[in-house]
Image (tube, rainbow, N blue to C red; front, side, top):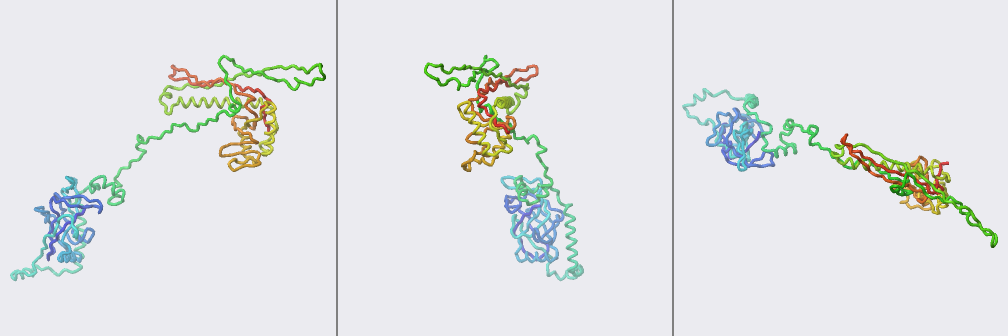
Amino acid sequence: MLTRESSDLVAGDGRTVTVQLAEWGEPRTVSDDGRTEYLEAFDSMDPAGKIRVKSSHDGDLIGHAVADSYSPDPQPTIDLHLAETAAGNDTLALIRSGAIDAVSVEFVPSGDDYERDGVLHRVAARINGVAMAFTPAHSAPILALRETPEHQPESDTKMTEAITPDAVTAADLAVFGDDLKREVLAAQPATSTPTHALAQYRGIGELTRDLINGVGDVKELQRVLADNIIANSPGVARPKFINDVKQTVDFGRPTITAFGTESVANGEGMSINWPVNANDETTLVGLQATEKTDVTTAVWNITNGTATLGTYAGASDVSYALLRRSTPSYLAQYTAALYRGYAITTDIAAAGQVVAAATAGPAWNPATGDADGLRAAVFAASVEVESATNMPATFILAASDAYIAIGGLDGLYPAPYGTQNVSGTATAGTLTVNVSGIPVIHDRFLAAGSIIVSNSSTGAWHEDGPFQVSSEDVEKMGRNIGVFGMGVFTDYVPAGIIAIPAA
């Protein structure tokens, strides 16, 4: 229900008040919430059968009006009957004094309302109440107050006396007021035109405003709003796809990288052969006893070492649908995975061949040894490498368990904190470990407990590949995709590959 105020009451002396409810077609600025204003004009009204009359919009019931007294011409007017109650008497006194000179209508909008040139026109507004007002919105003055004259002609005195009712007591007025309230409340639903709960809103903006601010008939409106949830609209709930394949780790080939690689060209067969100087060259030259006596002579032979290439390969049949419809590209991801698998397999092979070819050096137990003991063992091993190759050791390879044990030694301190007079460093932030000046390389593909001390001149990984191979599988509408390569570790100087055993 909306309320509209008017103006210009005319004071009088009676209990029947004739008021003008509005002025047809006159635009007036109104507001339903005290914040948003718009222009409104009345085109027609439809009064209820019995209309409530109140001291204010939220005030006491002071009387009533009936539809029979409503007149639309030339302006909409109606008679208000004020009850002989305290509130009714107070209202009459205010009207007589001129304090109240206007009324305000309470109405329910109809579905025929329309907007033209920025003015909202009310059509067949259902008038359910009239309230006294001080600040009018629409021009709706009180036109007159009517009552029986106080000085009647003498000829009518006997008739007046004959029809004068008994004196009205306060109790009678209270009963009358209660009955009137019940009649008004009982009559209202029957005479009011049903309207939709959203009829009070002129647009989606006003409705959204009240929903956000929690004002108006928000609770009732929320009960009739449909619930739209994402579970019922899977077509718009599109997932976010990440193109990087996670849990992909490239460990590289630590052992092969440490020793280095050499390529094997096409047509060079399946074996690697290299010349070996296995002579004791301390016997080649000796002291001549005297002039013209026999000098030292010895046999100097060049033998050979040999290793056979191993073949490493993997492949699968991939359908055309998977090749063409995948994002990210399945072919690119699968090919990269094949190369990573090739790297793992070949490094495992090389690590095993290195351990098999190594020469046992000084012992150090990762479970019980300390940093000083490890430093002493590494130094002795580096001397052995230098004796075999004329170069000291340049790297230490360690399996996972040995690497963890070395990194946790009390005598190895993190390099960023400054180290002096220590056996080495071990930094968890970079996983950089150094013992006696030699870097320790972690190779998880080495056999458990393995620690190898050497340099790159003692051996190499000879390799042909890896190569990507493919062929169309028309019968199954797919493509055979694989990777292929050959390789072997060649231990040129086994005496320079020193293994530090645990015991």
